Image 1 (cartoon, helix red, strand yellow):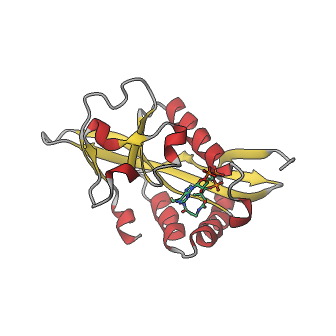
Image 2 (tube, rainbow, N blue to C red):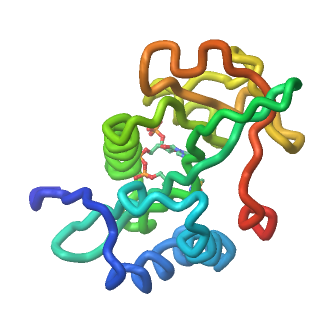
Length: 176
Ligand SMILES: CC(C)(COP(=O)(O)OP(=O)(O)OC[C@H]1O[C@@H](n2cnc3c(N)ncnc32)[C@H](O)[C@@H]1OP(=O)(O)O)[C@@H](O)C(=O)NCCC(=O)NCCS
C-alpha cells in the first residue's frame, strides 16, 4: 500500500459509504443499521469518534466509539466508551488498517478527555492495542460472554481505578 491512508472523522457525505462498508464487511446490514441508529442518539454519539479510513479517496474502513455507562452496586454511574462496530473492506483486511483505526480512535478519545474504552472482541487482537480483560477491574458485561472477550483499556493512568460494575449499552445495541 503506497498511497497514504488517511484517518479522519466522517462527514455526512460519508454516511452512505460507511453503511455499505459495514454491510459488506459483516455480510449483513445489522451493524450498518446500528451505526445509523447510534448517530441519531445524541446521548451517546460523539461525531469526532466516528472515523473513516480513506485510501485513494475511497472509504475502506470505519470505526465508531459511543458512550456507555458502568454502573456499580451503589448506583454510581461512570461514563466510558464502547468500541463498536469496526469494519474494513475485505480486500483491505490484514494490512493493518483496523489497527490504525483503533490507535487513531484511542488517541482522539484520549484527547477529548475520555478515560476508558470497552470492547467485546477477539482476545488475541485487541490486547495488541493495550486492552485487557475487563474483569481485572471487576467490570462486567450485561450479557453472557467469555470474560477473555470482554476487554477494557485505560486512556489515562488509573482511568478505571475505583470503577467497577456492569456496562450498560444504549438500546440501539439490542437490535444487533
Ligand atoms: C476486524 C477487522 C475490522 C480487522 O481489520 P483489519 O484491517 O483486517 O485489521 P488488522 O490488519 O489491523 O489486523 C488483522 C488481524 O486481526 C485479526 N482479527 C481481528 N478481529 C478478528 C475477529 N473478530 N476474528 C478473527 N480475527 C480477527 C486478524 O485475524 C488478524 O490477525 P493477525 O494480526 O494476528 O494477523 C476486519 O477483519 C473486519 O472488518 N471484519 C469483519 C467485521 C468484524 O468482525 N468486525 C469486528 C467486530 S466489531
